[in-house]
Structures are given as C-alpha cells and as structure tokens.
Length: 155
Length: 155
Length: 155
Image (cartoon, rainbow over all chains, first blue to last red; front, side, top):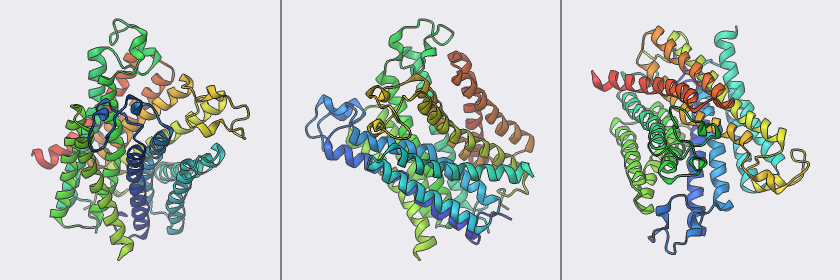
C-alpha cells in the first residue's frame, strides 16, 4: 500500500514541511531581487547595465560583488545545499512508515532549524550560532536517509 | 488512494513536465561543457591547465571568468534555484488532486516560462524581459506550494 | 496501482540509491566545514572573521578563495547540478515500471559513477578522467528522463 496519500498523517506532515521549504527557497530568490533593486547594485550580468525600468542609472560598479546582495545569494546557495536533499530524504523516510511523532519532530524540526539559520545568517550572527542551526538541519536529513537505508538493507 | 500513478492524468502531466525539466537542467551542464571546449576558456580547476585531449594549449588565462562560459553557469544556477523546487511543489500539488486543466496550465506553463527565460538569458535580452519569465515560473511554483498548504491546513 | 511502495523491488532499489546520494550531498557540506576549520581559511562571510570557538586567530586573508576549501565547494556545486535531477528522474523512471535489472544498472550505476567522479575531483585527476565519470552519471539521468517521456508520449 502506498504511504503517499493524505490519508497517511506522516505524508501530510511531510507535505506541509516540504511546501513550507518550497516557499523558503522561492522567497530567497525574491529577497535577492528586492535587495538588488533597493540598492541598485550586485547585478550579475553585463546586460543588466542597460538603462531601463529596473536600472535607471547604470554604472559599471553595479556588477561588483555587494555584501548586502551577496548575503542573500549565499543564503540561497546554503538552501540549495540542504533543502532539495530534505525533500528527497523526507519522501523516502515517509515510505518507511515511521512513527508519526518521530516524523513530526524531524520534519518540523528541520523547518524550524532552517528558519533559525536564516535568522542567524541574515542578521550576521556569529559563525558559531549559524553553524549550530545548520548542524541541526543537516543531522535531521542525514538521519532520515540513514533510517531509510537501515530499514531497507540493515535489518 | 495514491495519486501517483499514470492512471491519473494529472500525475502523467506532472511526469512529462518534470522529465522535460530534467532534460533542461542536464542540458545546461552540457552547454557549459560545449562552450568551455569551443573557446578553451572558463575552466574552474587548476588541474584543467594540464595538457591533454580536452586542453591542447594550456594557458593560465583559461582559469579566468569568461562571460560566454559563465553565462551558461549563471543559467545553470538559476535553474537550480527554481527547478528542484518545481519538482517538489509539483509532486505535492498532484497529491492534492487538483483539476486537470489547472494542473496542465501550471505545469506546462512553468516549462514554457523556463524555456522563454533560457532564450532571454542566453541571448542577453534586457533584465526586464528575463525578469518577466523568471517571475511567471516563480509564481507558479509558489502557487502550487501555497495551494498544497491551503488544502492541508487552511480549510 | 502505485509503484512507490517497498513491495516493488524497483522502488526499493531507487530508495537505496537516492538515500546514498542524500548522504553524498550532505557529506560534501561537512567536507567543506572540515577543510575550512582544519586550515582556518576559505571563509565566505565577513562575520566569520570575528574571534570565537571556530576562529581563534582571525585574519582578513581568511576570506580569500582557497583551493583546498573551494575544491570541496566545486564538488558540492557539481553534486547539486546532477543529484537533484537524479532524484526526480529516478522517481519518474520507477513510475514507468521498468525491468528490475535495467533499473538496478542505471540507479546503482549512477551511484558508482558519482563516487568515481568524487574520487577523480578530490584527488585532482586530469580533466579527462573527471569528465568521463561526469558523463556516465549525466547520461544515466538523461536516459531515465527520456525513457519516461517515451513511455508517456512517444508510444
């Protein structure tokens, strides 16, 4: 029987957490757009120096790396290094038919850890604070993948 | 009952759109390879300066950023910021059992928007044109994730 | 009938391969962390220059690109360009109900190709060696997506 239906509360939990992380990743792109437009800097392509609705006062310095914009890009890159693996590991984990409480703790725990990582990175908190939330999220994804392998080949 | 079978035309629509986007992402890697080999520039690793079948006339300048090659890498990065989220959001959206017409509009609409984004970026069209197609694709992914959350917790 | 249950040995094969690739991607992040901490260089954010448990002797040069650390980041980027597409294409491929032997060859073949790509890149083997394993992995993902399209619209 397929675990991937909303009659299964573990799959519903996964779907809520995964959908929230979709919004997180897509929102990070819009944060970069907002920051680029707000300060008119941190552009990535030569053609962005053409005058237009988006760029009313072009200058070559607009193509230089700008930390305000690049911080959002680094956040985005960090998301891409963690969230697609979460979508995959979470789906496999659901297929193993885990206990609902465990699934809620891991899946919602990842969402909270990534929200805290965003807060720590966006506000330039110390490396130690940022690394703590990164570690929690990473360990959850690793646990779900290892749990799946254990169920399938370790028993 | 699982929605994830080809007896469900919404899942079939998703599978076609998702498979096309797999080919898009993988093709972008090959476009970077083609451009690197064609002009012998834009390499990323020091060992690529060793002479061999791929690089017959090594020179240190081959490790510099080259816009012809880097444009393909930027396209690739933009794909990675949008397409994995599309795969995840689309699968969750299918699980909500949406109307077929809506699903076809959103899923094929995303494919068309990304094809147009590729055209606009590859040919260095203005930021405004590129941003328009980026926005359409992004809004579709955000809609599918929000629709899933609405079905699961908003009702 | 859903193919996505562990009663289907093709899905079990996919789950094992996909979980191994989750561990690969997450492990790459930890390799970057290990290399940054070991040599105290290759940091990416200005706030990482603050003294603390992670960085006991800050210096501005720690923000410069460092090949030992950047090699791990390039490996990570290459993973992100290939592995999420593998998760998506593999899942679609499973839905087409392929022969078990073919699925095992492709899914485990991808895992082996990426392991060899890691070895070639991490040890700075020649571009030709690295490109060979990249190509094998890429062709497998492309084949699985094309196979899915062929089953759904080509017949």
